[in-house]
Image 1 (cartoon, rainbow, N blue to C red):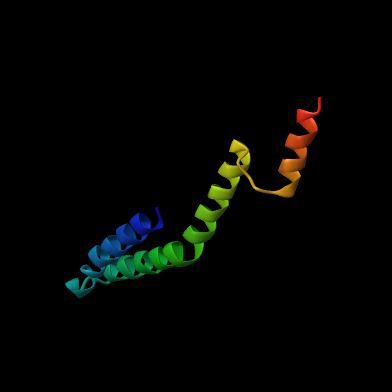
Image 2 (image 1 turned 45 degrees about the vertical axis):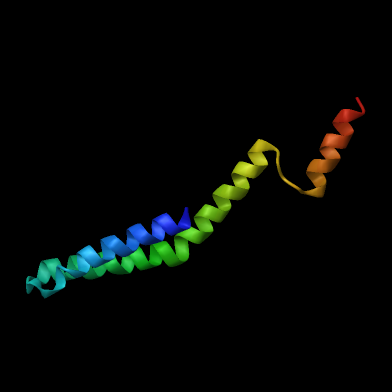
Length: 79
């Protein structure tokens, strides 16, 4: 999943970088802002966000390997 996001960010960054030689200041500024935003997203935000979503999904599905979840299962099996 991370590879798909990184490759999409790389392609979009390359597309925006093609705007830089145009000479139009507005296009150059938009290209730089988008490239910096993509770098921040792919390097800082996305790994943290995807890891948090993966852990949240595993806790919601009950497939967590915590000792607390094992205790809950053990207590419910004695009832």
